[in-house]
Length: 205
Image 1: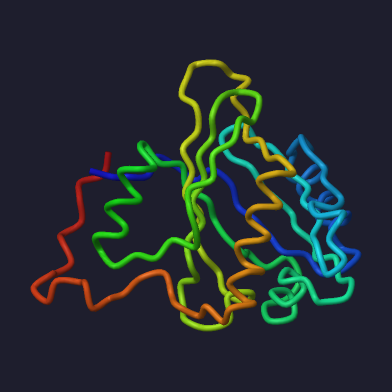
Image 2 (image 1 turned 90 degrees about the horizontal axis):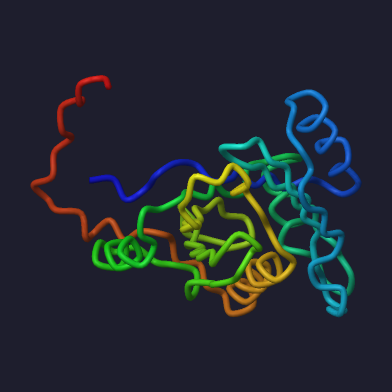
């Protein structure tokens, strides 16, 4: 049984002064709708911060982030320096039951970045769990998955939404990981059963 329902949103990291051109591309060329624009998720932080602009496509969203460097370099800036402009930083997956998946992830050697974040986004309670990077190393340079559980319903207004509070919490988790030198990867493959074999392809639906 799959723990994941679908892709919820994709986050791209933009180099300095390029977030506007990528917003134009996703809005005017691809046909998305700008639903949120936060130009500074940590305006009171003297060290660093980021912008986050969110674009809705109905069944999924795109988030654009751009680093704001002050006394220190933003982790978004570090990611772009490593991977280039408009590089995919993370993909968020909508889960059927986030808490059940979190327990399953832990039981199989998975490492979340921090605790489950819970907030109300205007449509209901939203849960988010950020994981550690796919590869070991600098957490500011790593691509990683995010897992969410959104409100269920038939209301067409249940669009992809983001908030300054969520952006701040996400930002702080990576900044804190970098500060303490946490380079642990997402998954410990020693937990993979030695007898595991790739199953045959399932019939097409």
